[in-house]
Image 1: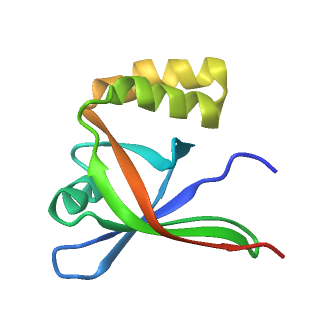
Image 2: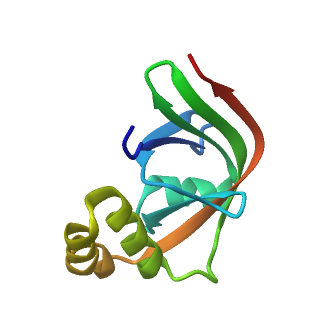
Length: 121
């Protein structure tokens, strides 16, 4: 079993769902993602912190409903590098973080789970 992508749902201004694949970490009881500030998910979370996160493989999944917050005290560049290494490997992750992601204005988002559902086959 490899590293899985999350599927993050945020709430659009009109109340409809917005869904996007994300890299994530789980640390200290929080799900951690990172994004550029020009992304819709960032704007949606700033306006409405309610989110859902799905991590799945076939019929096995973890579904999280929770509240997200922009973690401004965290170093967004450091966090995207950590995520890039997790998903791309050490060498490629560091290179992509420094040559691509660090050129963007990045923020880290922490998701506090309020409800977690798990299904294992």
